[in-house]
Image (cartoon, rainbow, N blue to C red):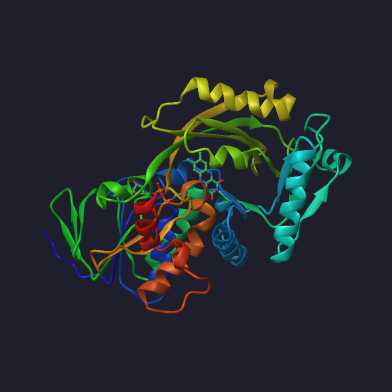
Length: 376
Ligand SMILES: Cc1cc2nc3c(=O)[nH]c(=O)nc-3n(C[C@H](O)[C@H](O)[C@H](O)COP(=O)(O)OP(=O)(O)OC[C@H]3O[C@@H](n4cnc5c(N)ncnc54)[C@H](O)[C@@H]3O)c2cc1C
């Protein structure tokens, strides 16, 4: 048994834990980063890698935009395998009602400094000729990006290691709290600050956390270069993402640098098995084909699933956990954790070093969750 003192021990080497380790190490802290699996092997390996500005709430917008700017700022430092591509997003509208939403989004983003372009049907067709006929238009958000998340997690981990961080993989954490981290082999690490960044499994280590697993499916096709140029998302995606009771699917496709097409997405509560659910996969693909009929003729290479860490108010939990002054959270990022990992890391490191945060942290503080959920 060893008892190494670190300034901070981070549990979970997904994109969030890796980004936190990097930020803490760069600020001079001695860091231990622990994962029971490999780096980025959880939801991070399953995610789509769409770095997207979202506007469900002011707080969601603030964190996604802050984070996206951080992704942009690192673009020249990224190795090739992160596959950083600023392909932009097109939110696709099927009818006049959804065009109303396009215009609302255009106004919302414009007022907050994000440039977007409203597309009429002809402009939409010119940009994405493989969409079906008869669509009402869309909204182009040119600054949205696509990355390959597991390699991004590895990049941040390696940067942290270059600053002296120690990485423990295949090391399962049994217990955290009161400055102690107990690994299943009996090893114990101590630190005045422990960060629970265990994603969808965070509540196993911190009982009382309001986090549910939300299962998602993805499929990747063979190579079809130039078939797709932008990340395309139906505006109905927002309804799908908001549903907290039923299973839902939405049209959400992404061009990969290889010419492959990543097809999503689904959301399920209460599905704890990681096996592919063929009924929901079929629904997801049918939805995609309603928008892009030519997808039906494509060969699929692989399908997989992953678990999003969902909180009741759809905002992550970042900051101190009441009841244990050594315990901090960086979890609950649901379907936006790739995007918001970098903003999360900055906010968390600011809290740990008692610095003023660049955006208000209050909407993400775990204390807000406990108060609000207690009255829900
Ligand atoms: C299908 C799907 C599509 C998605 N698409 C996008 C997208 O396009 N854009 C976007 O921004 N986000 C997307 N997401 C969400 C994103 O993938 C997650 O929010 C993000 O990966 C969460 O990162 P994390 O580091 O918090 O969790 P994880 O990547 O799950 O990492 C948690 C880590 O903790 C480790 N761990 C857990 N318990 C223990 C323990 N007891 N001991 C040691 N280690 C432990 C796990 O092994 C794991 O590696 C998607 C998610 C899914 C499922």
